[in-house]
Structures are given as structure tokens and as C-alpha cells.
Amino acid sequence: MIFIQLFIAFFEIGLFGFGGGYAMISLIQGMVVTRYHWLTVSEFTNAIAISQMTPGPIGINSATYCGYTAIRNAGFSEITGIFGSLTAAIAIILPSLVLMILISKMFMKYMDSPIIQDVFSGLRPAVVGLLAAATLLLMTPENFSTPSDPWTFWISIGLFIATFVGTKLVKINPLSMIGCTAFAGLLLLY
Amino acid sequence: MYWTLFKTFIKIGLVTFNGGYAMIPMIEADVVDKYKWIDKDEFVNLVAIAQSCPGVFAINISIFIGYKLKKISGAVCTAIATALPSFLIILLIAMLFHQFQDNKIVASIFAGIRPAVVALIAVPTFNLAKSANINISNCWIPTICAIAIWLLGVNPIWVIIAAGVGGFLYGKYIRPTE
Image (tube, rainbow over all chains, first blue to last red; front, side, top):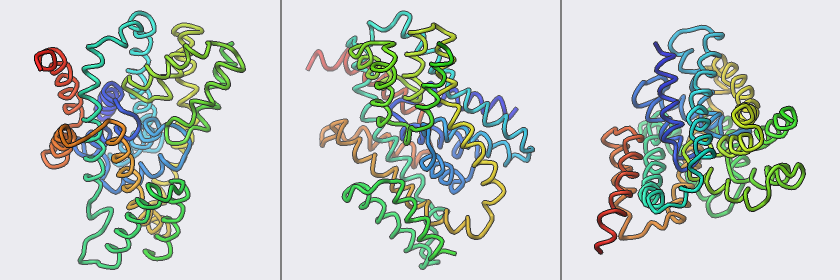
């Protein structure tokens, strides 16, 4: 049953995943955390962290990771977990395979049509909202602690601000930034 | 031929970070310059279409090229090749992480990384708002979408569908009469 849900969830994510990897994070979150509760918010954030630190597209990385973890969290064995990650990865690729082949075969010339342009004029601003929602949904006590634990809370806020300023304004490489915050976590939050 | 395709896209899957646009010049170097599978103009066109399609961008572009060269079997070959390296690496990490996530050292490292990851999603939100030309007159669209998902718990897929339909209806009925 969970395999069928996993397949359908990631198939839908692949089918409606407009706007690149970050927009897809919002869709994956909507399924994996909000709808099915396969992963907690902090597990999902770990998944995104690992997806960003390793090579490969974020969509494939997080599908693989969430597929495995969802099955393991449901109490199944490692081998079953591997099938979970395979299910999610295949499901997220399948819509692309069908759509790209259809487009190559017959719809290539319609891609510039006014109707498609109109649809995208609605999608583009919405994707900005998707990313904003993904950010807001990750701002939870699980990721930042609460003011009742001021040490962890303020360090988390500080690391958030440092990473935001560091990557947006100072243009530090996101990977080095993750490395620094990992070290800070080990040093300050152990 | 299949083997060359497979090797090329494995390499692309392996070196791509953040799914993104850094790999376009790499694909171009192999597919256009080295093997001359397609010409430069067609490549630019395919990249533009792959970007606007749903799904993983790197996978979309590899399917286009695979299909162009060897039809459906070529598309399956390049799609698997692009996904395979990340699939194996992530699977390995996921298996290890599932065992070590309760370890105090690992937990403290990730307690430090998680706020950073939230910031790494916040930054592209602002960058994307700029490139999508969000201004005073249209900022209600992302605001409503974000509130629907964040506070009302609406599934983002419905937001995508509504936005697409909304854009279509706007173009068909409202813009012409303005």
C-alpha cells in the first residue's frame, strides 16, 4: 500500500514540478511531510541538506532519500527501503519520460504558442509563492528550537542569517557555507 | 552508441550540483562540440523547452537528446544514466544516515546545517521573485500561493494547477479586453 502511495505521490510531483529543483522541494514537502507524514520536518530538512551536498539534481536526490526513509520509518527492512527509493526515483522520472517524448514527437512546434505562454505567465509568480511557502514551512521549532532554549534558538537564528547574507550578498559558495554551519553545529550545539 | 550515450550522461549526472544550470555548458561540450549529436541552435532550443517543462531539468534535457538520437530506448538510456549516480550515492548516504542519525555528533552537525538549509531555500525565493518580475501590482499572486500552502495546508500541486489555469483564463478573456 505504501509503495502505491509512494509511486503516485512522486509521479504527481514529477508531473507538476514546474519551476526547477527548489520549487520541487515545495511539492515533495507537500506530499512527504504535510499529506502522508512519512518524514518529520527535521528529517525532511536533513534530506534537503544531503540532496544539496551531493552531486545530482535535487529532485532525484530528495526522491531517492525520501523514498528510502519513508519505507524505513514505516518499519520495513533495509532491502525494502531500497525498493522504496527505487519506486520514488522511477516515479519522479516517468512523467518526464512520457512528456518529453510526446513533445519531441508532436508538440515541439506548439511550445511557443500564446496559450502555453499564458499558462506560464500564471505559473511563474506562483512558483515564487511555492518557494516562499517551502521556506516558511521549514521555520519550525524542530529546525530552530524555541526561545525557551535560548542558546540553541539564537545560534540557529544566527546560522540562518549568516547563511542568507553569506550566500546572497557575499556570494559565498553554498557548499562551503553548509560546511561552516556543520562545524558550528558540532562546536556549539553538541 | 548506447554505451557512449550512457557514459556521457553518467558523467553529467555525477558532476551536476544543485540540479542546475552549471551543467548546461558541460552537456553542450559533449553533445554539441565533441560528438556533434545535435547542432548548437537546436541545443539552445531544447534547453529552453526542457526548462519550461515540469520535472527534473537535467533529466528532461537528457531525455530530449536520447530520444533525438535513438528514439524511446535512447531516452530511457539517457534518463537512467543521468539519475543513476545520484541515486546510488544518495541511497548509500540514506542507509548510513538512518543508522547514525541518533548519534550525538551527527545530530549536532545537522542541527547546525538545518537553519542554513532553510536560508538556502530563502535566497532563491528572492532571486526568483526578481527574475519573474514580481512587483507591487502582481505580488498578490505569490503571497496568496504562499499563504494557501503555508497556513491553509493546501497541496502545492493545486496551487500549480490553479496558477496555470488562471494564466490561461487571463490571457484568453481578460488581457484582450484591457
